[in-house]
Amino acid sequence: MDQFAEYEPRERRVGTAGDAAVAVRAATTADIDAIARVQEAAGRLAHRDAWRRAVTNPECCLLVAEAPTSTTVVGWAQTHHHTDPQDAAPAGHYLGGVTVEPAWRRGGVAVALTETRLRWVADRADEAFYVVNPTNRASIDLHRRWGFEEVLRAERLTGVEFTGGIGILMRAALR
Ligand SMILES: CC(C)(COP(=O)(O)OP(=O)(O)OC[C@H]1O[C@@H](n2cnc3c(N)ncnc32)[C@H](O)[C@@H]1OP(=O)(O)O)[C@@H](O)C(=O)NCCC(=O)NCCS
Image (tube, rainbow, N blue to C red):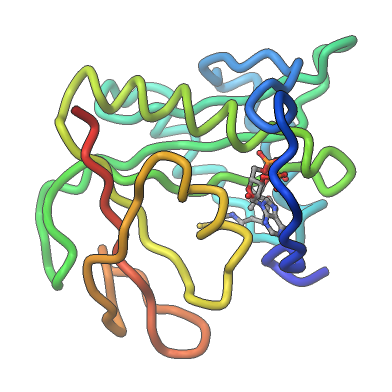
């Protein structure tokens, strides 16, 4: 599976995306296997040690989304508090790692995970960032509703290097 969703833009559905019936909650160490399963189903790498550290890091928000009729984890997402800039990406709270189980996509799960993360960041900062590969148009469209705008493009952002060579730094004001 490609690590990014196929780009399939469509007319905005009123009252659907963002109204996912999934339950979003803080992740615990007991969720690490389930997060890894979502990640693997999406063709992405598992970072178990980083997730274990994130669960106990008060500077980080690690969330899971559970299916409505069970406790099956169908998506996860986190934030990173970037404090020591080594490249053009400034210090701040960054959204990262949002991944939804392929069978559960286009139902508002990522919107629910992102809305919760942005409320968490808004309690701590007046802006939020994320970095994205320019070919990941599904992700860029997902984040548009919160007013994320391109700041700059670079080969390396928050220490991340990008497939294809260039990444985009995005920023949204939260107040
Ligand atoms: C990107 C991703 C997280 C979206 O998850 P999702 O739960 O399907 O997203 P939602 O249902 O909440 O979609 C919200 C909006 O995002 C945009 N979007 C999501 N998937 C899209 C796609 N495949 N093509 C175009 N737009 C898309 C749309 O604007 C959508 O609203 P709409 O359904 O009303 O058109 C998911 O496709 C995924 O896990 N991709 C692989 C991991 C990844 O790329 N993560 C982001 C890294 S920066």
